[in-house]
Length: 138
Image (cartoon, rainbow, N blue to C red):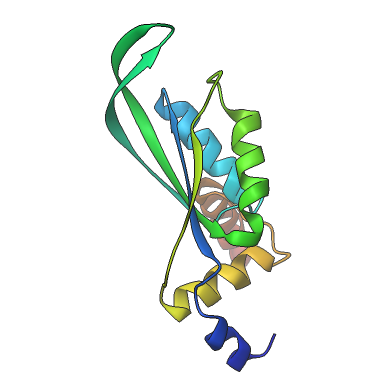
């Protein structure tokens, strides 16, 4: 796809996938695994207070809301990934389309998700930097 086609295409492919989980460990785990597998470009999470019926009882609990940013073409795979990793018997997983986003973000998202380069964590990046620094001293 050339740059003119990318600009005309704009951000129509950017979508959000939402879910809720019960603890921060699962939220972080789902975020990291989806990004490492290049199913999402990012995941934001925050504490929410939920009221809902479950097995005939109205419950009120704290949960974590997760919002993944991805491309529409990857969203079904992302939703399947979330379903497979989720601890809830009946998790809420919803895709929301967007009307518009800025072109530089859309292009960065597309380039990053299509890249063959393996993504690494910040800890791995620091370790790699430390090893490279030591090698320069030799």
